[in-house]
Image 1 (tube, rainbow, N blue to C red):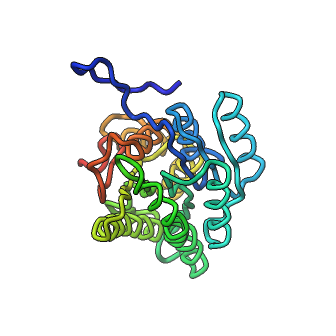
Image 2: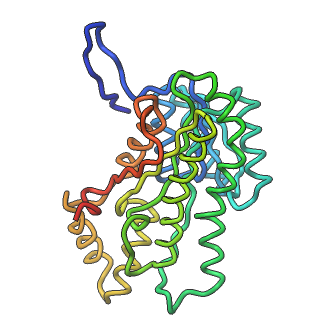
Image 3: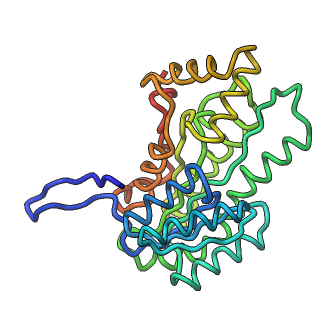
Length: 281
C-alpha cells in the first residue's frame, strides 16, 4: 500500500504526492520499476497507460492494477519505433482524455568493457536508452503541452537515468555513456520547454543498484569482471552503498511519483539521486 507523506497546516491535513485526475504513460511498465511505478501512481489517484514489448507480462500488470480498483491500459510499445510511440500516446488520449505525465523508464543494460563491446552493442544501447527517450518525448509533447496549459502546476516528464549517468562505470562504459546522455537531455529539454513557455517540467531520477532483474545483471557483470561469485558480488554491491543495502523498486517508484506530482512543481532540470548515498562519496 502506498504510504502518503503528510503535513499539517492551519487548514487541516493535506495529503501529499497525490496524482488525482492525472493521466500517465510509462514505458517499460510491464515489470520492475515501471510496474511498481504504475502501481503507486494508480494508488495515488492516476489513470495509467503502460507500454512494453513484453505483452503477456504487460497485460498481467494491467489486470493486477484493475483488480486493485485502478484504471489502466496496456499498449505494445517498442520505444525504438516512432509509430509505436504515436500509437501509445493516442491510445492514452482515447481512453483517458489526454496525458499529464510521461515516464521514460524503458532501458537495457549491456555489461561489456570498451574492448569487448561491438558496434551492434552500442547501436542497441543507443536505440533503447537514448533514441527511445527522444522519441517518447517528441510523441508525448503535444499532449503534455495541452494538458499542462490547463493544469495548476503543469505536466511532467520523468526520465530514468542511473548513478552511472552521473559518475563513471568501470564495467559498462557504453551503458554509462547512454545514461549520461539522458541526464543532459533532461536538463536541455527542461530549459527549452521553460524558454518556450511550455508548462512541462522535466527531471531525471538516478537509481543505485536495485534488487530487480536489471540489478541482477549488474551484479553478475561485477562478479565476472572480478572473478567472484554472484553472492560475493551482491554483498559487495550492497556494502558499496553507504546505507548498506541494495535499493528496491519501491524506493525508485516513490521518487518517480514525487517528481511527477505537483509537490515537485518548482523542480525542472533536476537529477534526483535515489542511491543509498552512492554518488555522495
